[in-house]
Length: 614
Image 1 (cartoon, rainbow, N blue to C red):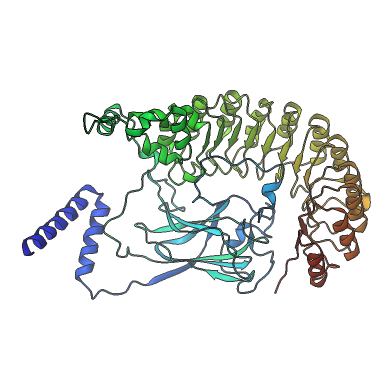
Image 2: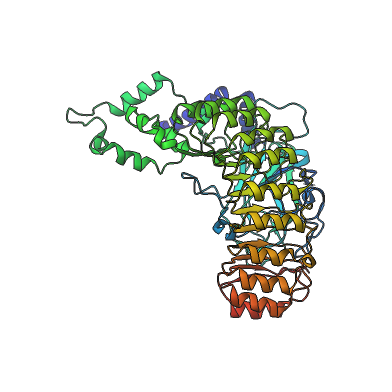
């Protein structure tokens, strides 16, 4: 027994020495420090630092306006404004959507195949703190309908530094499934986080509100941590991603030889896989995620042939891998994407991980067959990128540029060359009127157009006039917070685009019911399934009467904030619109909680929303 223990001790010592030698100088010092700390028990306790977010650096969406603070992500900077109070407060941060109702809309994009089940994120925000620390806790103060947070990540980059380091690392501190808290009231969410090997003052929250009954609201975020690196585990499993995989012929030949070498003279080489049809093997591996495909390609030549088949890459969603996706990964994927038709690179490439040059190279090589391109929140995009997309992806039908708010206004002129576009998302971009009109003149096949929070559009009436003349097949239009819309533009839109099924006029404060614009909408657009008139205080009973009479297929209606709608008008609407599933009457002064409870009991299939404050 004694010799065996001696051998095990020597083996442990040799492994530790090799780890210190093979790792970086920082890792070696960290391992040595861990051993020393284990030997010295009487060390002073490190003081924990507590700090609120100093600045909001980036986010994917918010309910508020670009020109105010109400319901915007910028409210997360600093100390709490609302907590521990509960309810709907303008001083909080609110994302654009909640629940699953929007997934049933005609404008909802099709899901990508091979999206990992573990990736739940739908929105994100990034927060900078004053001092880098080794995190011990992250506390999120949720003041309304908590439960949306699904991931908390930390970055090795100091956001206040002028120079970008060569290697920027993101590590997951905590991850979980979308949930619904037992109560919609305020809570402090502080999950147990895993330790990381670097200090950070850049934290990212990712959310998924699909389980929630209403908008989630966040008030503040607290980062707790220590200044000195705490004791960490000596060993850590390496993270493998597609950017680290080698495709050298020597390695592939060696892997193939090991896998295909016959164990006996009766061996089949590739085992039972030799008996399976090529198509069946393709079907089996079509269920693998992209990193798993890349790993399988290294097993042997047979699997490499299947994993490199371009038919496995007709659809490619890289969004779930944004933390580790770089230009090396794009280079490895290039030979496999000859038949690529749908590409999702949303959230990827920021802070130097992908350059505009690298993106353009990938699109030139793989973009000729693209019909769908989603690049929301990709801040590396510039005018040259859109020019290459317009030149290469001539058959493109769907383009999502949501929250690409750093694109220069002139860049959007190139979109006009994509004459086959049917779905265009420009939410929170700086597109100007000239470029928008040019797009509408050329892209006459548009079906779905999102211009929400496009603050550079100075006269939306002109845009709607051209839209009604050139895009008569339009099905969905989002004008969220477009304040320059008037009854004239809405009238022309309804007259020219009679096939509209979805129309979002939320927070369009220039529209007034007294002009009859909402009643004309109802009479002219009988196919309406979704109508948002959010925060329009002038919506009245006569408007609902016309909707009840003329829009029998209405499914989603938001009249939040009106003072002019009575309970009797709501009853008439619910009796007539049998497909109604969502009705928001929050802050409607004539509709009290008792009325909502009564109508909910009478029409259980309708989700009637009534927010509260305490």
